Length: 61
Image (cartoon, rainbow, N blue to C red; front, side, top):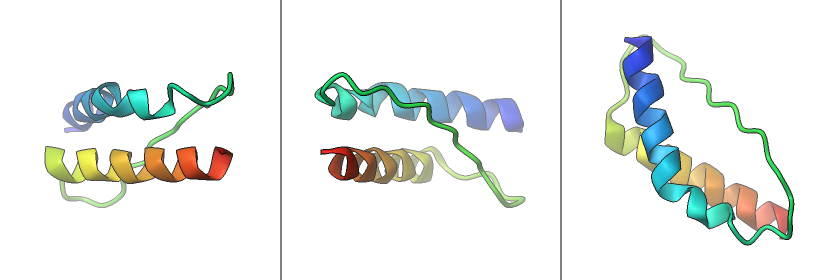
């Protein structure tokens, strides 16, 4: 269900957003798009958010 995935994504981001705290005042707008007909597990969403935030942090420093 779409809302279930949205809640899980928000929670995964909330727990990992500290990775972007030291970004020299830069602000970001993030958009997550989940594709496919299977519902990803929380672990997959969490890992994906972690990879995305690490990549964003590395590319902006």
